[in-house]
Length: 193
Image (cartoon, rainbow, N blue to C red; front, side, top):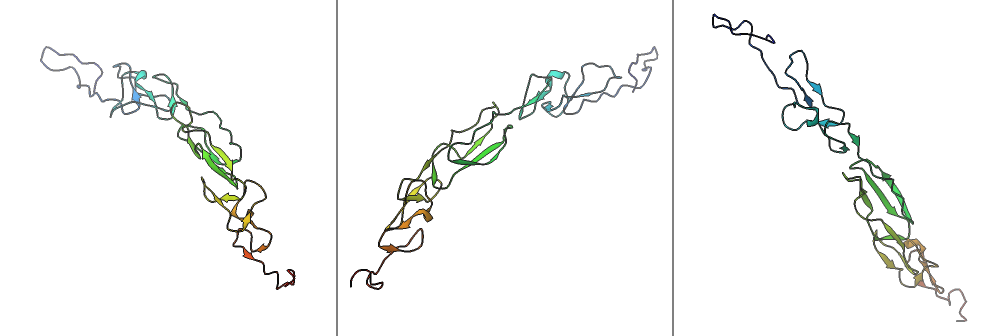
């Protein structure tokens, strides 16, 4: 319709009645000037509700972004996170919602902290620093958090072992990790039988 109409002395309007439409979602318009179009919100910002807005300040940063109403909006990031001692980094993303995943190395178990940390909306990592501890002598890594004793009649030469690090004691024979069987010295004429 026309941008301006007047009521004539005939009781009729001078032109076609304007047809005003609301701006769409994620747009705004600051005036009623028909010659001006709706303006898109700045990058990474949105309007709330099902329609646009009347002010740029109604454009709020999207999830994962931060900034003043009306923009600009910058991506939320967390600081680089170090790989803990005796651990391996599997993957890591430092943007909002990103995850860093770690595994304790062979022979080490998760004794404290989190294997997975998530970058939060405040730019801070969730959880606590991972601490990977070596399994003590004569034990092996049985699961992510547990060391178990070596099979009967076997032991390790140090700390931080997998099950294959458990070797049969003197006088016993078998594969690394057990089971270990008693050596029959008489068969090999070793025992003076």
